[in-house]
Length: 371
Ligand code: PMP
Image: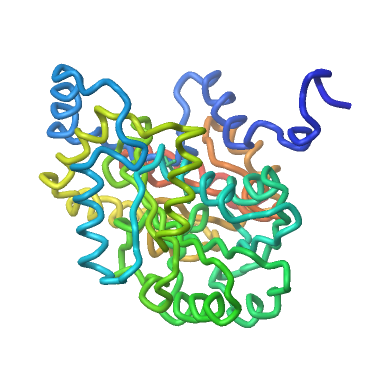
């Protein structure tokens, strides 16, 4: 039964995200050790904050062109052209990477079309797929969270429309190897299937340059954004680039939905090129080492996250949900793995937190190590 007679059947199966539920719990705790949050803990760079204030005072408060404010769009397009040199690669500025993912789904997926994603997955992927009437085809990547190309090949059917690849990944932090990125890109190309590469954590690749499928398949649709790299998740600024016919359709749909990304903040984002984020990334690499080392010392099993700011850890006792309940009793907030997976055997922690918070967290993890 729907919770209200007005609600569309389509929305029946959507509950509020499991992550939100942990946030609600967090609000009730006095001094939580919050390792649940998927956003950087550093503030937006001063240069960007000043540029945002300046843009607002300069009255850039109206709509921008749907494709994006020209100065930002041209800058990003020039970078993409320099990196890829693909003849037919066009760029659209979107309302966050989430906006780009929505527009891609609406543009590409017909009811009944199959969309391949990898378990554990970013929470939006199966939900967005179902929202447009698509069928999620979920490929398991446990225990090391590297994609097995043979399983991708085997999952392709005449209804396959799209493959969603996310590297570095949320929630595992795992970076797809060069071999995997190439193999998935080639499978998509061979079968004429769209490949979307979600590279929002691109700047957070700690051990090696990020392998990109667009290097092996010039039709790859790439989404990216400023949210994580510059600590501006609330600004809602992302972009997508890919084959011009697809991007043009997404731009047309943006006119009827998001209209445009926030205009003054698009202008402010130009200040991002004056900011060196390398020291921040180095700091996150150190925290990754601190957390992974501490967890292993306490007896946990965890795959080293090569990027992003998450670790996906095996729950002692075998149930992520049970572990999270015990953690909350110690004011420690992490997310049960079942939110991102068909399995409930792990939990996700975010190491985008201060060193002091991470050390408090590690003390609690040590206490919780035996079920
Ligand atoms: N993709 C992934 C994998 C993410 O983790 C997130 C944010 N949690 C997004 C996309 C959306 O980011 P935004 O809309 O803020 O750009």
